[in-house]
Image (cartoon, rainbow, N blue to C red; front, side):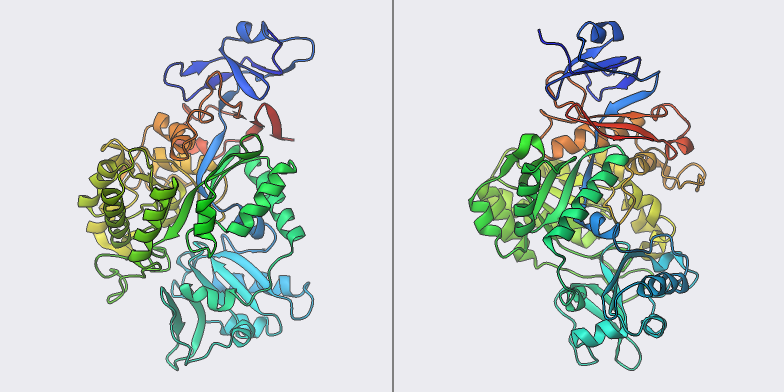
Length: 534
């Protein structure tokens, strides 16, 4: 038998394999796990050229998979103005002013990450202060959830917006008392300005991809589910993966509103391209907006905005049509739904499509599934639909979500335990760059429902917490299952791809507040180190 290429010895291994949950060593050959057991057994497979890694008692887990992320969005965020963590509109303006001072005259200034809920004044801002500070550059700043944007006067002029511009379908232009745009565009209205921004070059896109993958690897990610990729970008992905640029397994969801969708579906899924680096067998749609920008579609008015029930961003007949296409061509459909009305509409369309085109193992998904009416929670298991959720959204939103929903509806928000009790799995993620790419923040949220300061004591609606074993599965086996890849990745099992992470502490036993401080020491993809801590 040929010697192993890599052995990891003296480790505290959590395999995420129910048949063999714990071990002390792992051996790898030709990019796959060949042994999981004790150090003596792994050592016996080593030869003179085998790489030996002594873990020194550190914890090893399977490579983590983010089940809902935006790869190129992260790449863009790494190269634009970072507005995450800003505590006031003034701080946003200051950061943009500083970037504009370094930019060529007339160049677009792009940024992402502001959240008015983190400011003392939680009302949406007006563009006026931004326009005074940056009068000569068009500015486009995406809200943290990606469902609203703030633009300045120069951008408004360039897009030709004024008091007479109508709200587009599925979008809203916020207006002042004088009827003029305030500079805030919600959901479908964002494209009114966004479409005027010059497209980045292929070289810039390639640089963004490399930067985003390196950032993901730094946090222990070996795979992502890439939630919304154009047909043209998938073509680039195939070329870049073939060139060896990928250091992350990408399960890409083709955009359901792409003009080339049906032709792409007719060509069939892309499975395990470039030695498992790229798979495309799913479609992404949106039914509503986000809770933070009051675009999530609710069954009743927002508690803090009477008369507003959010936005339907895609007609339900389009969702049904794409569901029929997906079932016909052997693709999975994954629809963004945050509000209780949005979730119900998606489940209704799934039910109708599956009744017309029965497929036993479709694994259709609802992305986010944040706010659910109690009567809709059992429908996921009944329909075989997977709720793909993000732990860190709960810890980001908990400070103000009850203001949006009131004390009764909030019981159906981020309802992990209620869903798990029906028998479904919940693949976990971050929605980066909406949240940090660090998957352990969502792991910590699943087990504690608390922020970094330990608030609130005992957890926010703690009856919805998961166990640590479930949280580990939510970052490993459950995303693998949600991508039809459970036979290839998700656990440290002989025969599977050798994707694994070495951590500086035992996340399964340390106090919950200490999980967030965990450092990734090494990320290994297919037996190859793609990140090692300095």
